[in-house]
Image 1 (spheres, rainbow, N blue to C red):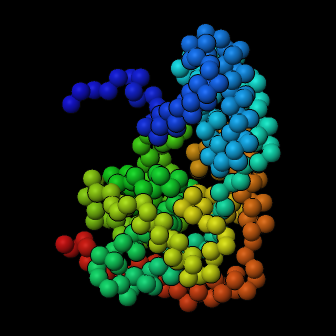
Image 2 (image 1 turned 90 degrees about the vertical axis):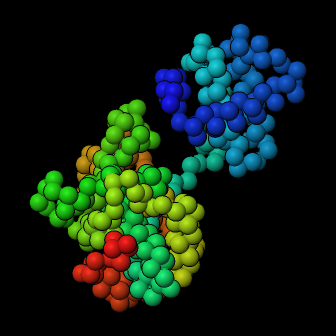
Amino acid sequence: MRAKRLSQLRYTAQYKLQLAKGWSAFLAFIRSRNIDVSVISRSALTADKSLVEFAEHQFQQADASGFNRTKHAILAVQHKFRNHKGKLGQAWDTLETWLQQHPYRPRPPMPHLCMQAVCCLVRVFAMFGQSSSVRHMLLVFAALMEAGFYGLLRSGELMALTRANLVLPQDGLWDDNEFAIVTIDAPKNRRQLGMTQFAMVRSQEATQWLAYVFGHYQPHQKLWPWAPIRFRTILRNALSRLGLDQLGLNTSSLRAGGATWMFVRGTEISRLKFYGRWASEKTLAHYVQEAVSAQIVNGLPSHVALRLKEIVSAGAHTFLPPKAVPSWSLS
């Protein structure tokens, strides 16, 4: 197999796709105004002015994707014409004004009680699964829910994990059975914190479930071998059954919820930054401020919280895995 060039490894495929979409939209825009791309390449002033006009056009379209399209158009121009970098100030200022008009809405954090209720419900359903494969999938889902919450993992990181990325107490690297370690390959912020990072799942119960579900996996096996949409569907169905549709929770809510839960329980920002692998305390402080505020604004009504507490209490037997060896480990 031919090795990739270094230039190919610098950006992810997803990021390249976003740049291409931004550039394509901007190219169509300047052509509609009879501006040749060669003029854009020669003059940073013309490029800056054209990007401002493009941003205004996108803003007036009221397209939900317009902001990101504009941002990636500016980045694409900087990428294609390196001498323009640092000279597109008006374009970036226009984008900042747009952001102020439509402030960033943080991912809704999942309250700890909601996460517990979802896991309890799914594990109870697993007990009555129509087949071993259904039971297996539901128990994998619940184990990864807890890993994402307590380990502050991004949803994409969860979906990419293999058994080789999961270090359990039984693997013999330490004696403490109160936490598991997850290694993350090529994480989102790898340029700031390294190509390989790790996260700790700081929950004895969650660690025991991880050991029960995945302990017998082979190193190459993916922890979630199904399509990511299956994970999202199970979560959406569980939230619906619990009457939590209105909260807008999704897989990204696990990291936000875990960070919020740790913060309100007294974890210092500096320590939380290390736990969650944020690049800077300033970024994390803003993230936590938004997340805590969102959780207060979108707080659970008292009757809903009471019902969830009752569900969690009734499902307390699901906090720890059964003693029996799981059937899929015997196949």
